[in-house]
Length: 490
Image 1 (tube, helix red, strand yellow):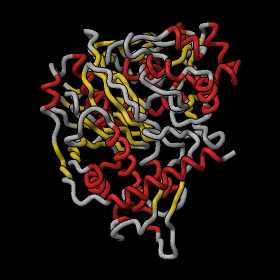
Image 2: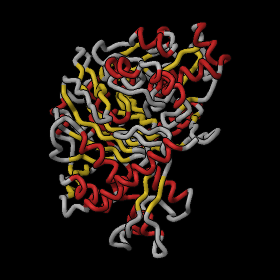
Image 3: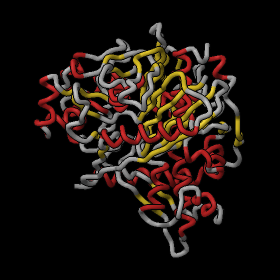
Image 4: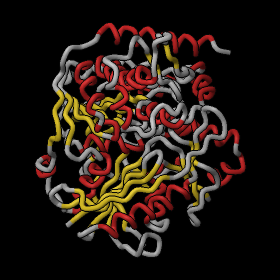
């Protein structure tokens, strides 16, 4: 038996066929367009996400030696999508999690004193990152698009809900607690949509999807819509919670970091909702069919791998992202250069949506290698920022995954900065793997999390060495300057 896992990320869709012993049988990948109408605005065309999903899945299935018995889905979180209940057509582009257009709405709600109550109910904070304010923005600025929502013709949700609607030919409008808990509309304690929050953000509860457990059959694919396949959809989770599951972080205190477009550190807190006073988020990790919820504490960093992409595409300093390691290794350190990659604001633990990128310490002797190394160091510093304020125990080891985890230099600098080992698995695409695990658990491919744990294999363990605290001190000062610049601009 095998599982088809669909990972609808921020820049493309990955499809994996995962075998019963946890191996990747085949893979497909398809990018989709990024739309930037103005600085700070990021949009996706939902139809392009769907077409990329079809292409990636078709590619993976053509190469597969096994026939999948079920489907699992994971997705970029917080992105707000609208679509017609009947036709499934989207009346407008989706507003992506990186988009910062709702800073003013967040500030307005903060000034009206709503943030303490919102945080109490959701475990989140008022930030443009989350879904609800994006929907508020659509209601205010696109009344034609929003009219369909108020009339009941158009529904709204996150990318998982949209894909499930497309996969099932419109038969199912559902989401799961891990995605729902990122919207600012879901109550951590109640486990459902909060009428108080729906009223605050002006979102009709009837337009929101039904919340279902993270594993167990939630629908079937429509052969006419999805490559002729009639398969159960039996697992779904937001990308970071899926990666936590894929890393088999099933016990309280287990911690992982996914190094992707951004970096996301999650600590399993078990059945306890742990609240942070230091800028971290409380969120649902997953929920079983019996209703038992596992929670997590999360630090969300918006730009890490995207900073390396900027070196490649924006500055032309490197030809490919993997080249960053070889270039950075040509110098022993960053030569005093510090790069704060606040290209879409600062996330945890600072939460400065208006902050902008900053490079300090440049001299006549600065080379491209110094800037490339400073970029890798910035990623490690950002992760250290989050880990040091995690209130839930101490980190015994950090499980690393995502594209940038293949960078040995970055992983070693990360271990040095944390003073703790960093463990990289053989399969680094743990987001899609987590979706596969959830789907297989939900349809009987695997019988327990104990079985899943046996499939995890270590690729390399990076032991901590000497820690450059002076460089980290320069980083903290540069972050202060970036934040100060945002507060004085305009």
